[in-house]
Image (cartoon, rainbow, N blue to C red; front, side, top):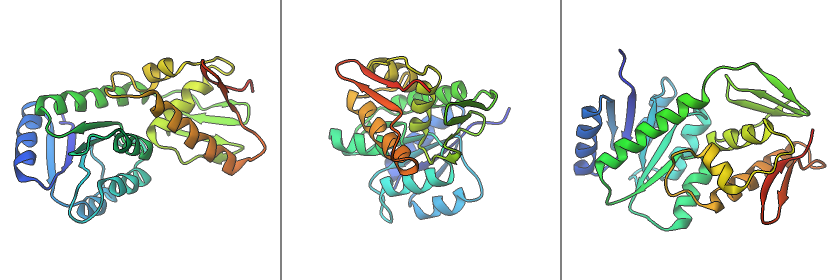
Length: 229
C-alpha cells in the first residue's frame, strides 16, 4: 500500500527531526524543506497529501507560501506550525485557507493526530457525486468547484465546504456551532469568528460576480442561511 505523503516546511532542525521521526513512525512518507520557495517549484509538478508549514521561514512568509500553494492546489490540507499564539494570527491563517494551527511548543504526537484528522476530513468530503444545479449555483463536488451565474468561484477549501453545506439546505438557518461541527469537524481551536470571517470572504467573492444579489442571509443571534433559490 502506498504511504500517504507529508511535506514538512520547517527551518529549525531539531523540530524538523523530531516531527519526521514521529510522522514516519505513524507510517507517513515525509519530505523536509528548510525554505519555502523550493516547495513552490516542486508543487508545480506534484502535490502531497498534507502540508505542514512553519510561519516563520527565512525566504518567504508561511502565510504567503500558503496562499500560493492553495492557488495551485485548492484542496491541499495545510497545518500551520508557529511560535505565534495570538488569535489574530490564527484567524489570518484560517482566512488564507489553512485547515489547522498548532502553536509552539507543541507535542509531536498532537501534530500527528491533527494530520490524521485532516486526512479523515479530506476523505469524508471527497467522495464523488453528480454535478447539481441549485438556482444560480452549480456544485461540482468531484472537482471541488462551485460556480455562481456560470462563473467559477475561486474558493479556499473551507470556503468551498461552507458554501456547499449552505447549498445543500437552502433556507435552513445554521447556527455558527452547527456550521463548525459540519465543516470544521474535529478541528481544534475553532472560533465563532472563524465562521464569520469565511462568510465575509464568501460574500465578497459572490458580490464580485453579481453585486445585485446577496444569497447568504444573516439571522441575528441565530446564524446564517442561503436564500431560497
